[in-house]
Image 1 (cartoon, one colour):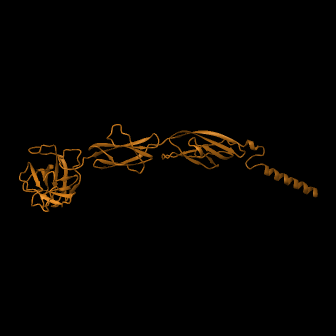
Image 2 (cartoon, rainbow, N blue to C red):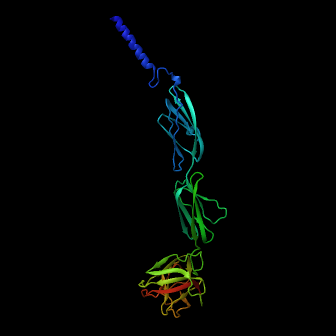
Image 3 (spheres, rainbow, N blue to C red):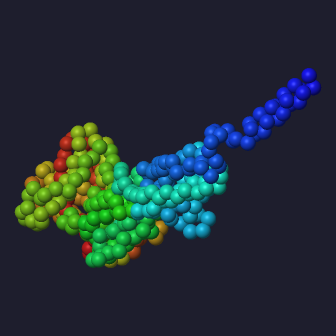
Amino acid sequence: MKNIKLIFGFVLVLAVTISCSIPDGISSDTTLTGVASGNVAKIFDISADNSGNVKITPTGNGVTSFTVNYGHGTGSSASAVVAPGGSTTHSYPEGTYTVSIVSTDIAGNQTTATYPLTVTYVAPTNLAVNAAVSVYTVKVSATAQYAKSFLVYFGDVVGEVGTPLAIGATTPAHTYAVGGAYTVKVVALSGGIATTTSNTPIIIFDPLGLPFTFELASQNYMAGGTFGGVNFSVVANPFPTGLNTTATVAKFEKTVGAQEWGGIWKPLDVAIDLSTGTKIKMLVYATEVGKKVGIELQGSTNGASNTAIFAAPITVANQWTEVVFDTTDPAISPAIPLGAKFKQMNVNYNRPNAGTGEIIYVDNIRVTN
């Protein structure tokens, strides 16, 4: 009986010894040096948002770790150690790279595999440009999906070098030497070769001030607006005869039911300076006699009060006539001091009566003696 127990104990020890000598997953007839790690599959997950981010997830059988060499970067940023089932992400500029993955098995054996990687950035989309114009200057901002930055071309210099514009920023004010029509070009940069371009036409106006001839493309005669139900537009001269044969004039319409005080207002970049002349003259074409044209001078730069001046009634119908506003007329109240300057001019017609559909044409508003 004692011998039987000894034999059983020996068999048990032998069984335990065998079970502890063979690692899980390895057959009893395979040595550790024979564990294979060459079955490494590369997975590149390349972002489509022009970030350049590429997620690399290596896999392989019997591997304890991977070393991913990105093929880009220096020092510690050029590679990463990845555990089985893990991944690493690296940001690439647009270009072609060779990524190498070194796999290490449980026996310490290493296998290296290389994989070509091409990172291509897409052209930005939904490019929107805002060009904010103020007299001779413009400031530009832009947005676009997948854009890294922008280049702005203001269109007034031969061989112009683009002005860099960052995401969410606005360019410094760009000043044009003269008024005119320009095209602002904005190039949205992807960070790679692909770009998207937008062309925005703008008009740079010369500073607005008298005289108003309504002939210059560089003057914003439509600046300001209307009030009280009046319409205002710049049109071809419908009656190019007599005192006025110019091509373009202003049309003033006091619509039916327009307020008696209805009119137009013009903010002036260059103030009306009555030290250069005390009279304001205007050519007028009306279809009836007896009604007055009026102006109001507002926004003094040197302390003068707002003042309304009404010219004498129109005495000639269906032809161009000159209306004179004398700023020294003692009947004007409050009186206009000599040398006064005003930054706004309003024009009205047939006050104090509501509109009946009257249409007049005006031109060549100027300061003189």
